[in-house]
Image (cartoon, rainbow, N blue to C red; front, side):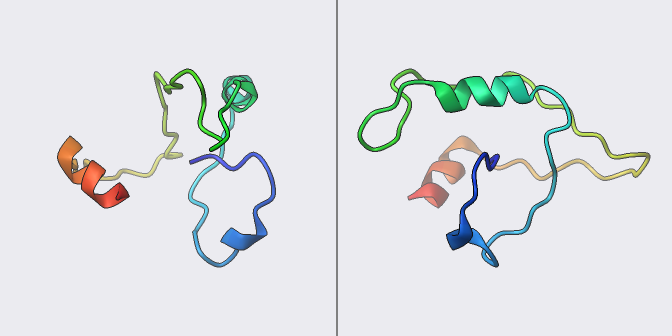
Length: 75
């Protein structure tokens, strides 16, 4: 997820591992979309592409998690 505001309740709970270096206007559009009472967007929002800059470091392929595994982890 991308933090767009202060969230002190998350301090010490999660590690930052990256930052948006271009395209923040797309993030701002997602943030500005109308939401329901549970703070969920009324229209589904999707990120179409992500580019990871490794600054010359080489990493192995990430482990892929199946769709059903992701759903069970979110519950």
